[in-house]
Image (cartoon, rainbow, N blue to C red):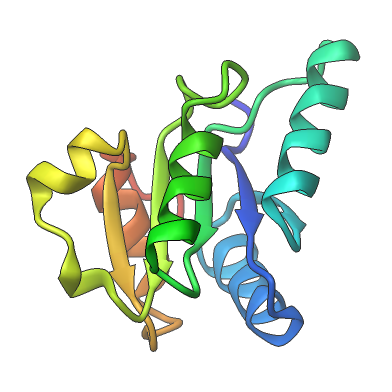
Length: 135
């Protein structure tokens, strides 16, 4: 069975690097990381054109949860290439969201920053209802 593929989108290079290590080494998943929503869409468009597998999930940094950025994130989530891929937000504002709000946004969950790197894969697997692939 092939390993799960996660598309990681985080604007901050140092956090992206930490997340990449957590997800790939501790979670046992393949990780494709980009720094913006636009890059994420480009990657998905190229993968679709080349018939390469779609990510099994998207871990999306939501740095500024103001009205404008929420609208941009919701627009991203509703894109036809994305709307069937489970999305997890990773944000300092995770507690702002109720389960109902996340469902309305088509997001499976929100993880708070700062996060515990060793627990992050378990949190993500739990939200996605994936069996642990860690050895």
